[in-house]
Structure formats: C-alpha cells, structure tokens
Image 1 (cartoon, rainbow, N blue to C red):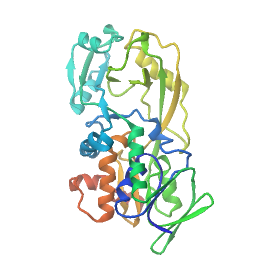
Image 2: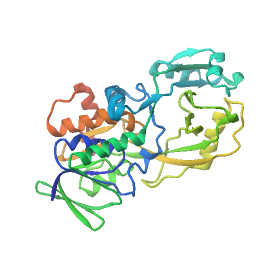
Image 3: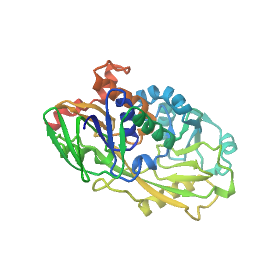
Image 4: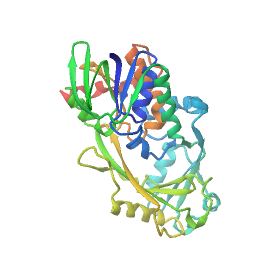
Amino acid sequence: MIHDFLIIGGGIAGVSAGARLAELGRVLLLESEPALAYHASGRSAALYEAQYGKPATVALNLASRADHDSLDGGVLSPRGLMVLAGPGDQAAFDHDVATMGLHPITIPEAVALVPILKPAAIHAVATHEDAWDIDTDRLIQHFARTIRANGGQVVTGAPVTAITRQPGGWQVTAGDRVHQARILVNAAGAWADPIAVMAGIAPIGITPLRRSVARIPAPGGQDVTAWPMMFGAGETWYAKPDAGQLIISPAEEDPVPGPHDAWPDDMVLAEGIARYQDFVTPEVTRLTASWAGLRSFAPDRVLVLGPDPLDPGFVWVAGQGGYGFQTAPAASRLVADLVAGRVPELEADIVAALSPARFAGRRA
C-alpha cells in the first residue's frame, strides 16, 4: 500500500499534523516509542499562554485558541500566571510585564493568592488570569482518533531505520516493515535533523535543549488547586500546581550531546529549587518525582512548518521548543494548507517566518 502521508513522530506535532492531513489522504504515523507523546510532549508544563514566544509563535498561539476551547469539548481549564521579582530583577520583570500583558499587584494581594509566599523576598509581582492548563493527553488522543476515523493508522514501537527517496515518493523502513508514501512529514522532535539527514535532506540546525522538572508534595499541606503558575522574573524558575502537588523547574535550556531519552541534572534541579525556595516559606524537604525533557529549537527559535524548498515532498513540522501544545491546532492547520496548496489563514509574513525556506541560504 502506498500512503499519501507518512509521518515520523508521535508527539503533539505529529498527531496534530496527521489529523489535519488525514482529511486530504491516507495517513500512516510511525512513533518509535511504545506510546504516543513519550518524549517532550509527555513532559510538558501544559500551559496555554497566548503571549508566550516570538511574534510568529504568538500568532500561532492566538490562532489556536478557538480550537483549544472547542476540540473534544475544550481542553483548557483556568490557571492564571504570576511573575515574581527579587531586588535585582526589575529589568527582567518590566520586560515580562510588557511582553505578556501582565498587571502589577501588591505583595499582600499576591500572598492572598499564594499563601506560602515570603513577602520580604518580593520586590515586585504581576499577574494575569488569561493563562490556562491544557489537558495534553486529551488533545493527543483527540488528534489520534481523528487520524484513525479518517482511515489512517497510528503505529507505535516503530523506530525508523532507513529512508529512501524514490520517484514520486518515499520508502521508509521501520523495524521489519517497509512502508511507501507520497509525502514524508518530519515531526520527530529532537530527532528532526537526524531524520532529515537519513532522508537526504539538508538539516536545519534543530538543537535539543534539556529542561529538568521536580514534583514536590503540596507545600505546607496547602490546597494548591487554585494557585496560579508562578515564574521567576525572566523565567529563571517556575512552579505549577499538578495533581494536588507542585512541579518546580529551573527553566534551564542546557545543550545536550544529541537527541536521547533525557534525564534531569541533579545540580541544575537543585539550583532551580533554591531559586523557588527564596520566594516561599515552607522548606522543600523531598521530591516525589523528577524528570527532564528535550525542547527542540531552530536557530532563530521559531517553529519550522511546511515543505522543504528543495524537496516539497519532505515536510517539516519541527522546532516546537516549549510551544508545541499551545500552537498545535494552528500549526497543523497551516501545514495542511501548505500541502494542499490552499491560502493559509495566517498572514503572509507569519507564514514566511515559519517556513523552512528561511534557512535555504544557511544550508546551501
């Protein structure tokens, strides 16, 4: 069987693109791990914050909002966001306020929202309510069901080992199976450049960066359910309620030797917890879990979406960084529009900013 689209990668990038492309033809999605969303997508902080990211990312965030509100009955729930600044953080705080549309509040107001805060440590604080938890599993499963409902296949435990360009299409070997497809979609996350090289396509320079996370018991036995997500000014750490506990991250972006199943750096994690600890009164005495994920960025830190300029039969859905879930509805719709030859809903300058063609000179 010759598939119309073969997608490599079963994270949010791959399943969302697959759902849109399944309306245009037969889709086969291959995921190397035993389950979808195993790597970065399964380790996301799961926040929708429309003003988070560069202008092209913000445009995707905004264009995705209606889908987040409606897909599968809606996948968002209220969270809110709070940025905390210490004495030396004013410049970073001012930048955050301006770029994310925050409004300053008083320290007593902040403590009323998050009772564990340490007033003496806070120089300034700002919030806004328009930040939302994303039900990431629900979104992944919605897109996977859409693929299957349109006659497509989702295959896990299928690592790709060889890709061959053929007249009119591609031959892809995964395990002991050989598949053929008209168009190859590279949604391989941290593995996007190695997949491109395997296919004979020039890499873009997608760089995986590690981010570590710890989960701790609810501080002081508090009910954390309604607390906002908290950031240190300049995103030097963050903390977010999660299943009755709190997750804390140093928000690091540390280069790694190459794509792999990431694990946390204990020292970096300890530094991030210490930065969080500076702003709160209860001591962190134990972790209930820790993990890390690889957030993959293009050189300009903007997503890479669309057909490769040198081989339009190879489609990039890569470089999501930390924005994969919140941009997925609009990003996948853009990819389908470009593949189908339709005029995208996004403005032309945004489409150009996201296109892999912007790297043509660098890759020559």
